[in-house]
Length: 357
Ligand SMILES: *Cc1c(COP(=O)(O)O)cnc(C)c1O
Image (cartoon, rainbow, N blue to C red; front, side, top):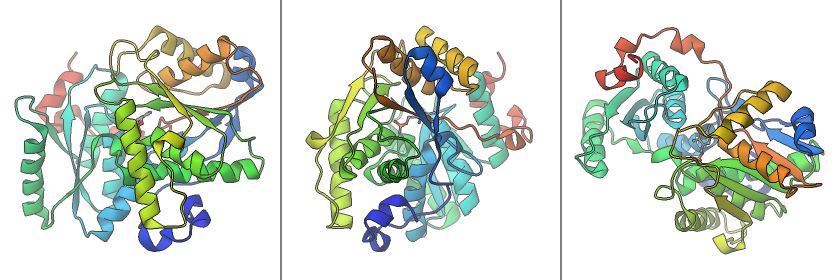
């Protein structure tokens, strides 16, 4: 049973969940990286192996979103993302597993190897990929696609916003906070003082922030933004936190009534760099250092920026004697069985330019 449901059994009756992931994910010590940056108690949360077919942070949200989709007898889902979006791929992988059709409206982004890899996986999965038209408002494009899917598959699709971030999706990491509490009680790691997590569509961090407060933990969440402040900002985070709190209390009145103002977090854009998916020098240093010391592979778009903040704060002496947890949101499950099955010419033509450079 998911940890949140053990603590609050009332949710079993009110919140459906599609059990797709391998939870709890392990916590592990990073002794070598810790030593090189002067931290005796540095740990990693292995969200990278959250699921059998594709890991990373999006699966926790999808368990709740797909739980609702199945309850509502949906046949298809629509979501959104940059062409290299890990969220879009996670959604397609697990929609496929549940027999749901998946369509994604895609935005352009800076090219990287992982962008090609994710696109090839979509080709193998048969994801319906649609190019975002910047001359048409997004709601209109979504409505048109929803009508088309509804007609073809006989029921209105579920619409999953960017990053899978809604109050419902964010329950994934509320659950993760209770999971972490159990891991601390079992002394798999001490209760962390600080968590460092990449901050994109905000759902991962928001669920953690509220969940840690609800679980009575002292942990402060450091949200390291990897998108600019028009997408994700304090006001939107506060709104999301309050939305999560309301959903939880409405679903089980035993759950504590928590508001954004009760929570412990901070939000910084200092490690963001120029733009989404533009790698930063500090991020690349962080990538190299964790590879060299722990043989862990991170990415430049998300996790390297979060780790560069942790390293920077350790270097300033701000984490002295603290227990610090790095939340590894990046998939590490091998998807070559998928990517080797496809050619880029199987993709719609708007994707080809990522391969023809
Ligand atoms: C999506 C993503 C994030 C950001 O998570 P949000 O819930 O959107 O804030 C962080 N890291 C990786 C690798 C991601 O794919």
